[in-house]
Image (cartoon, rainbow, N blue to C red; front, side, top):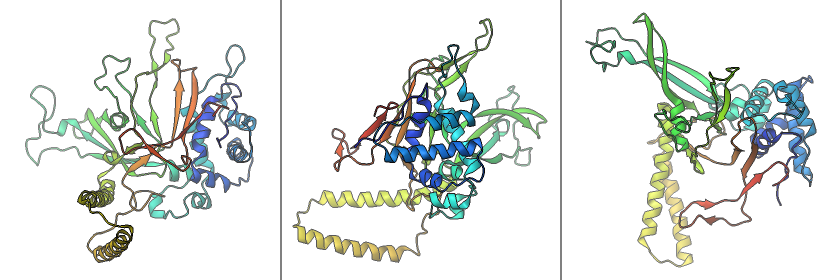
Length: 411
């Protein structure tokens, strides 16, 4: 049977789409179910309404009118109560709603019991200091390194760059810091901006663009401002990864009467796959642990292909006996190699022991239309099953999965 939709109660598609995507995150659902606030603040009422909305969707047979959730959303986020000249509710931004939801959940769901309910097997080491449900599920610990460009020894004469003449010369040490993010950003350039130097056509290119750049800050050695290269890498991975496509931007309008500027949307297509590999975006320490699992998986795949290429014909009984013998042999080899190969260390909470840094796509929020302050939001959610059968796409090995499209109350 089809899952149920949410009625649009006046430009609430921004909320409906995010709620539908998060509905199938079991860890979030378990955390919300364990939430029992002692006070009735606007934030607490919002989270309780969200939980009740999910519970009603699970037990009703018709599209749901989320009246309580809309009211508490406007109480928790007064900006979402804005109305247009005709008194109708204004369209809002789905990403702003998602970020607001994450902030409220981070402030309210801070009990260890709530984190334990969501991630029952996560240790304190795996959590890496995450002290609330939001950061345990969606948080990325980021390692940022700033390197002063004027100490790379590559400056040419007359360009005001300092030449490092010897190892004993002045050196500006790199500045390393850590921050916590709840999403990665795919920075889209090359759309309407003809001067953009990077034309992003794939999600990996956009993420890489957002993690690298340059800033201007003071150099203590030079005694003045200088250009520094900024590089961010993930030092702790989350069980649920969110990526924002930066399609909306603010365009200055100096020639207009009010000079207020206008909100615009980048319409260029950016491709993404069903699997997002974040290996190249991780710190060296995380890469080291992921590589252990990746090398092991690659070796197992090569062994499987080699067996297949042999093309040996066996009857069922012989194949079964060989499978059992292989399993016993593999177990014995694994035990003998335990002392030689150190197992990978955890790189984040709630991740498989053999995690390779690859995330499977399960939900997408899309915006339809050219108007950044209008248009329509929809949710695309991967079905948990394909009625017992999964076909391949054309001649590829990729599964042709079923997806639900949530267009408010229509599914």
